[in-house]
Every structure is written in C-alpha cells, then in structure tokens.
Length: 279
Image (cartoon, rainbow, N blue to C red; front, side):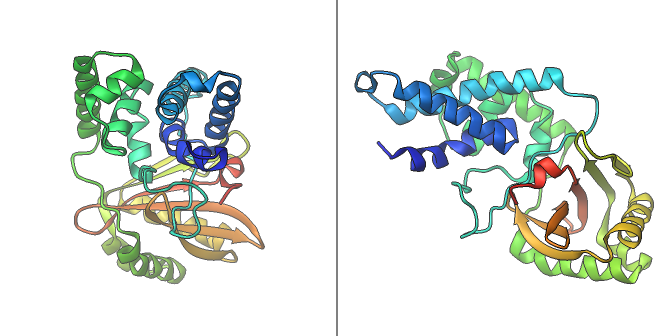
C-alpha cells in the first residue's frame, strides 16, 4: 500500500470531482484516513479500494448537504492548476472546468457515477460495488446523467490549452485596445460569462449572455478594474485561463471554453477570494 502522503494525493480527484472544493476534499480525505488508521487494516484485503469507496461515499453525503444549504446564486468550482510540473496532486483524473460546471446540474450520485465511468474508466460492476447499488441502477444513473448533460450542452466542449494560448493572448490584446469589431469575431454567438464572488464580494453581473453584452461587460471590467493588473495565462482544470494580479494578490481567475468553431463560448470568472487562495 502507498504511504499516506502519496495515497492522499491519489484520493483528491475522487473527492474534488464531486465536491469542486479543495478544502472540503482535503477534510473528507483526512477524516477517512484518521478512521482508517484506527481500524485493524490487516483485515481489509484491498486497502486502496476501501479508501476510494469511503472517500467517494463521504463526498456524496457532504455534496448533498452543501446543495441543500446553497443559496440561489451562481457557484463555480474552485479553480485548480493542472500545468504539468506545477500541480501538487494527481491531476490527470481531474475533470475539465467546463465539465465540472456542467455536471453541477447532476445530483450527487449521478455525478459520482459519471466521474467514475468517464474520468477513471470504472466498469458498472465496480461502480455498483462502490456506491452499493445494483449494476442496472449504475447504468440507469449514467444514462440519466448523460441525458441531463446533453440537454444543457449539445456540443462537445473544446479544451486545448496549448493551442488556445495564442488565442487568449490575442483576446487580451484586443480587450486592451477596446477593439469591439475584433472581439465580435472572437466570441461565439451563444457566449456567456458566469461570475462567482462567493459570500464576500458582489459581482458586477452573475450571468451575462450574448456578444454585445459580453463585450460591454468585459471592456468595462478591464477599463475600470483590471487595466493596471498583471495578467498571467495559466492552465486551470485543463483549460486556458487568465489570472489577474494586483501586486502579488490574485484578484480574478477567468477560465475559457471554446466551441467547435474555435470561438469563446464561455468565460467562467471566479473572484471569490476563498477559491483563489491555493492558485
């Protein structure tokens, strides 16, 4: 069995893909590992599988509790750096940012089945054992999950951070120039900006849709808030992102999603300071 530090890193994606929050994920893992160390582990034949099952089920229970308490406002996932060499966790199985936003519409158990099948490649027999459901029920949960996701987004999300870096550089330069005509060509017709300020900050707009309103919002934000910030391009949850720094403090993380035509379809803007602490 792996040492506790290595094991903890391996367990993070299982919790984070369900909870979308690093602190909550680490709390779940720590709690499970403490309980595990109090057991007679020699009686557990597959200790890694035991821990994965425990982490997933505790994450599901915490997710249900968080969903009940959540206020009626946009809540985005906590961003996670996935650059090779910079990530401090096992990042390959971390779902893309767009996918995390999308699966937030699923209930906790649907999310777990989808994650285990799509991110980790588990079979329905393995999923059924982890979630204590039948194999047929596991299949039904996945089918329901996929139907919900397809109804919300009919196209496959395009994520290619390396290829899109130059496009993001061009986007920043276009915003700086205030070139409305050029921005119109870079944005998809269905473009949306979603913003999450958490409980501490009020955002200018939680949801903005359409090219005209998106350009108005993004140029306004740059002119009145961001033009003196240092801007860094980063890979967040396997997608290109802009990080806005005031001195050394991260103020805003904007994650970009592209449609099949290569145009910007979504900008996910996180300004909640609690969600930016670990970047």
